Image 1: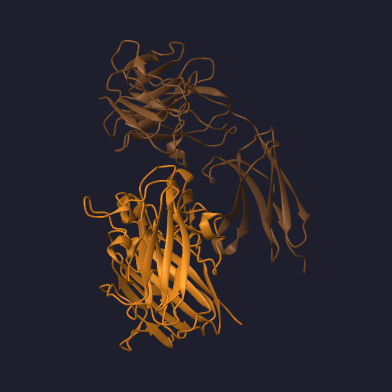
Image 2 (image 1 turned 135 degrees about the horizontal axis):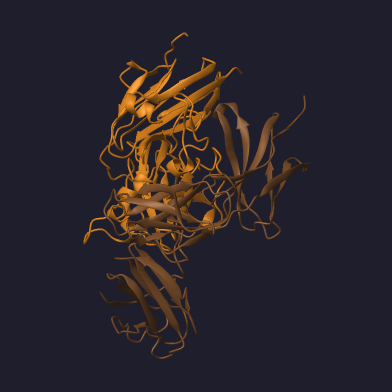
Length: 309
Length: 291
């Protein structure tokens, strides 16, 4: 297969938050997000196709709590569509904005199953300590310890240095268990004049129980089947959560770093994130996976399908 | 341990059950080291509860009356609990502890404190299909646990498992008929629980809606509130893939609605609440546009 070079690449790493006022004409974007208990199956087809290993539901199904986007006032959960930002519950909704925008993220803790506190802590954007969402006993406030039935509004600004794909995650007293269970998602901040890609894929590497998952799913066929067609402007938003480093790799494609270096593999550490784009030219079924071999064997692999026009 | 907490806001009734097979309830009465009892106007609910030694039970007064939670042998006494007040007690000794309300002595309850508990199945099993049983034990990790079944001829081993680090254990049994089960370690046995076995049938018919296909599903014998899953055989997903989940209504039926762009094999499963463990499977039918 012919290797190819991406047209555009954009790299984002964690940066210090700097104070910045919203630019004139910037939008205020409001999101209603809930922490909701769900039953989650890490391998719904109960099968690792590559090794031929079958898994029992007792090994793959668990109760957990996830972020989900709702309509205004948390009246109804939004369906899982590209425009709603809701993925497939793990990761949480993709929250999109532009540089200069204000983001109001209204968060309600609906965890009436475990009755844990939860919060949202955002990377890459600007905020005051009251929107940090990070729990420190005696220091943090209600933003970091939102109890079941309570809500909090996180007030964020997408500054000039915020363009990129960034993590958000639970940083409450329950953060370790919550992150293990999938309470994370991504912010996608576009530049002021940056076009919306035709396809935007969120790829989150994280260990979950005995498995290594992509977006909470393990093994090819269970992990997201990413789809595009020739001619699409395709964007990958990639991050890792948990306590392990991962190595993101896509077959048959390359992208350029901001320094102009072609890559087809990129290391991503916990809570690190990056994004890149390319104009798709290569039809076929490709693999994307973590290139840490053990992680790939434990499920961190999926397919990327490119259709002819 | 004794404490009284005034609970503002939502009162907890029964147990907050987390979905998933590892957290099923025991007579509405156990959950990872804690259990909850609601005190009503004239009764407690559940009146009989089983816990593992070391568990904490919390009572909440959900009535407008003031009550007490007082052990018959006075080992604990909440004192007066006004509306919405909460009282918790940790049980560190084996045995059955009866309690009552000193203000309304006809309100009575019992807490059974055990070394190990087998969770009462919340749903019937299907004949000759694997069914998960779970439990908890106040025993060291690695302790071997025998699962025994009694179909009227006495208990006999049907599975073995071991206590995990978090004090839980799980085993799969393949029942052919209704039986009573218990977990056994040495001479210690859990209270028995019943597992009903029902041979259920899942059927469906497809109807064309305005722009969608309606999959009208029915389960017999009637299983209201049971979980059903619509699956499609999708090559991209390397097999059967759940696309919708639902619950049967009081008539034991459910309707799925979907759009199909191409012909695909369709089936409906009756499952445990995990949405994955099959109890019965419908026939497979190919549906979708014919071109």
